[in-house]
Length: 425
Image 1 (cartoon, one colour):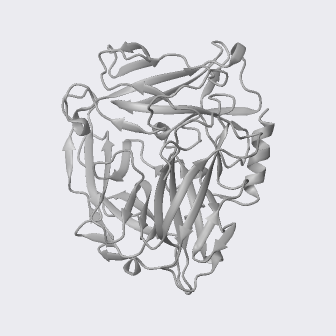
Image 2 (cartoon, rainbow, N blue to C red):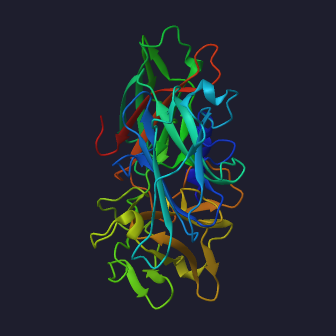
Image 3 (cartoon, helix red, strand yellow):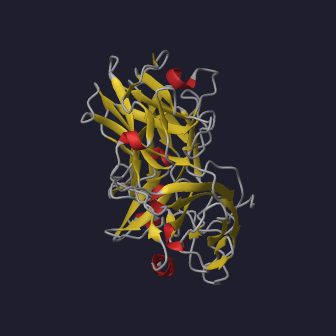
């Protein structure tokens, strides 16, 4: 099982490193915290990138189920490309104060589930980054950084490198119909006296940071152009268009909802059983690439009037037999794009299917199922058995270019771009 995929992962591993850090930058530490979002203002599906000295701030928001107002603060911390700590004071990368109170909040109304909704923008008049790079946002209580509530990653970028990228079909016949290859060209003429070992390119598929691939050296150098065009680098399983779930209305059943139980204290939604799509024919439809949008169909204010529901997912394996030596995960932004206990499906031997319950806010969600071998260190998600892989699949790819100038103490992001598999540059 998965021999071809494992062969590819090994080959990629010779040239690329996994894009995660020494700890997960996206974590929630308080059970009362839900629906943590960070994205550019008015762009809920975009990766959290803010240009250095730019005018496009990020919107950070979250819900707290506690019954009364909480005294929340935030700070930011600069990190290296691998998310390791940077030996610098906040004064070296931040203008303003690095401990700021979150003063914008509202109390839920109409919703059965009571919660406080908090939000703020960053950068703002109180704090603004002065250096590009990876950052971690930290939210904590009572002005005490040790009372950590949650963390989220974001990126501050410069525009020193121009780039051109295309999504191509690999030449290797074994993977040409199941994978996608990104060809990348960087123009570094604005960077004087650069060394190729000081520049790294990272590509993220559909905002799954833990599956990012990083290359430390180009395949070719032609004057100021760095070309990444190898047949065993920047290659991703293509997957299939994500499954979807519409719970924008908790009174009316959408196409993928079998039942809504509104008699309990909180609505309980049963999703239609999911099966493997590996052998089904590929067809095109618009999806959110594993992301979600908080919204409703009743013209209510989504931030503090949308309700929460317990959503029950089920997955039926072939012949109701569990996957041997493997774990099944519900993958996407709805499980924070992390394959951990919170995303793991549990097999019920009496019923012959996997199940998982999530507490979700009203909205439109997309997701996939992913198999991982137990104790596997495979860097890429594998959709072979659960979804299938099709070269035609629409995927978003985000590109970060990191640079460590001579004598610098951290990795800068000197270029950012994006390419879609259906809308090549």
